[in-house]
Image (tube, rainbow, N blue to C red; front, top):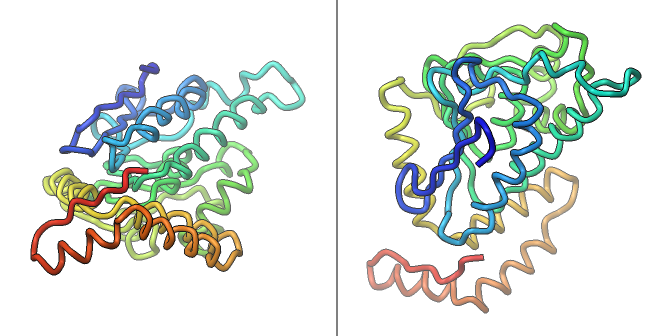
Length: 262
């Protein structure tokens, strides 16, 4: 396992893997090595048919306080000392954004900078009332990448994107909920139980429907109309027997045993 990244199969129930950013002494700030290692860590559960849902969280009282500032000027090219870090950061974001199964960020405390990048690359974000959110390149003179900007823009719109990137100011969890940065807001004592419950619901549903939804949403956000993706997945649900099992289970008033595993 990569240093400071812990993957726990069935960490929140059958089929629900948990990826923990595990550097609590630094509020789970991500080192250059952690960014570099993240795609490899995600490759295992992405390919494992037993994993149905991935929950991403932080150890201790913070989700992730961002990239480790000590790494920002550590590259060998004086003209672009962030080149390697930027490459690995974007690869890590892409690996999480393209993870083929539902992903849920479980957020407590600080979710800043690179923490927001990770959270917004998840499909859904559940936070407790201690959550604090910010995107802070303006505090250190960083030019935010178009990939990160677009992910934020698609989620919260131009107003909040500009507010966060222009100012670097932090917003509290109720503001994050109101603006769409998070999807659910819970008392601290209820967060893990609700994520566990909801992840169990996701694990019980059709993986084919979930995979197709991810692809269609991506196509629509990218300017496509989603029709080729829907047509291909519709054929697959018939061929795999997914739809037949869902209809049969509904008629027999039982839980479906969906056959498609990806």
